[in-house]
Length: 433
Image (cartoon, rainbow, N blue to C red; front, side):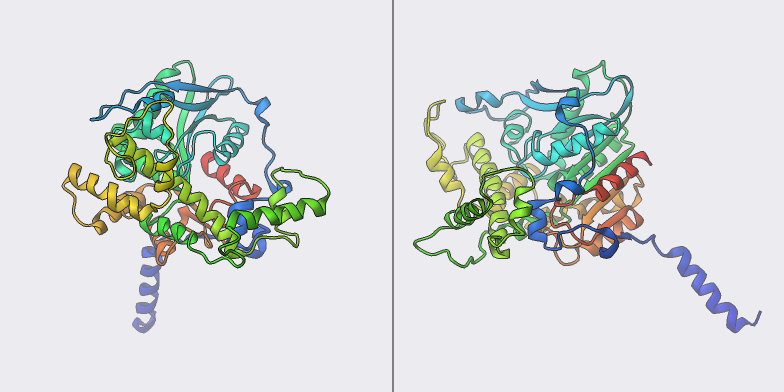
């Protein structure tokens, strides 16, 4: 063969060998998910007839349990926190030996949240023991399981979660487990990555498979995206009509047109097909408001437990009967950026002699695990190209880091397609290997 032809052939073969495996990009036409509007998908999720067949709760051997952890910390809980001195979780068990999967909830969500329960039904129906865990950002986890009650440092949150998982495992020695698996959605997906990395060192579970569902890549970008939704300008809102009055009026007209009030899981999907549908601005405000409530709850709880005096005066007498409503109203004025600046960064700098805000952001995001994620074949990501929490460069990072272990769906918003049967089948296929 002539040398002039040999050189390009060698060059192209080297490129072929060196190129990373490509992500699995799902084509919109073949995907079939019916909601192309990310705001609608985030809220309405999947129409019931396009969801997988899963067992009902009546057919699941499950129960809620309490566990007393006594985390080592420098503070004592206020008197009114007595109901959450024990951490609750949900366990669904199979008969006999089976794989077990832990599910970590998203921002502010408890173990019993809707998405966590949906994932429970999916995996239980596929033959898994399932353990549902609250998010480290939920008030019950902060009260009963967190050593600092200041969530946001992902490695610390992962250590708290890992200690909870080991305690739960020890509480049920009779469960026969063939192998351990891990998943989480939204912020729970980010936590799952950090827990997996910790388990590489501790080797208590030796997770077989770990799946990150719609995780934030840059945590600061994601929370700012959601925070900005609260600031959306909505037509029709003025000094005489507030946002919730506007939405309730539309719902009232919709139910009047339907001739009945039927609040089932298909209602919002049908509502968005009607003439009373919410605009993108109204949907954005609804999503942003939900997130703001979660953040405010977290900021309020962190301030109160640590007696920082930012929201609740540190010496204010608080008992079981004390009304905390005025302080929670004050907490609603604090977005995630406020929580980071006023509580998280000072805590981080005090504990770790930390540096700049940029260093903290890098440390608590997927960027901080880049080398591990690139080289761990057991970890995969499923995400949506139109997810509201993604920012510039995030999808590129996922492609470079995960390669063919990234499945990118064209639609679904933020976690809206988790209960779409195509996604459900893909999840089960991943865990089955």
